[in-house]
Image (cartoon, rainbow, N blue to C red; front, side, top):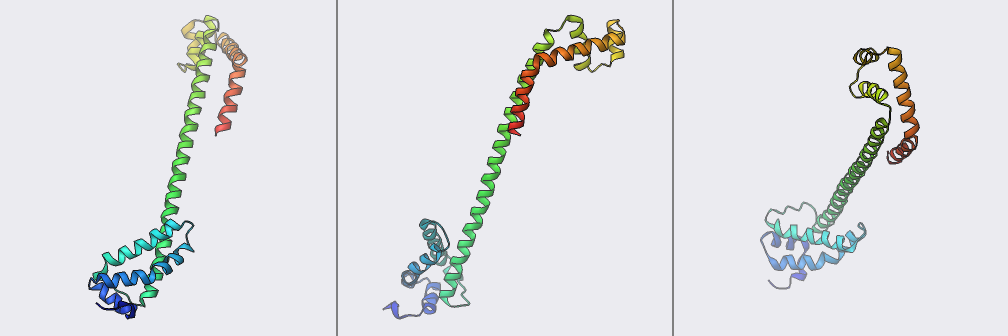
Length: 195
């Protein structure tokens, strides 16, 4: 075709719909800079503006046969750029929300791991403390706290009075509190810091 520069946008759009590459090239040359400037005003990075305009022209070419423009070509492409910018920000918003969610989950996992380590350290310290108790006191404590027996059951099992069971438990807890006061303080501070 001769001198397409004199054709109107609408005539070029009709030729584009028929698959005319020269008509596409003419529209591309007429609108590339204008559409780029329009997109660049709305996005932060020039590369994104470029990508948006490139996506628009790619879509125009790929969908040329079913192209249905009900307004002027100019209005159509400027509206398309606005839509693509909006779509870009929507995708960015979803991406950021996803990243924040992943970071939150990782932080939560990190905290739970650290809390788990602190709990295990505290459990080991308690076990060491229990091992240092006198044998009868340790037996009473383990029956109470590990096997969940009540004072009456412990008294029957060990052949001692309930009052003696209470005395052994009181002594065991006092010793453990005294021996573990530093570990418990550090664990509480550690857990509270990460919660």
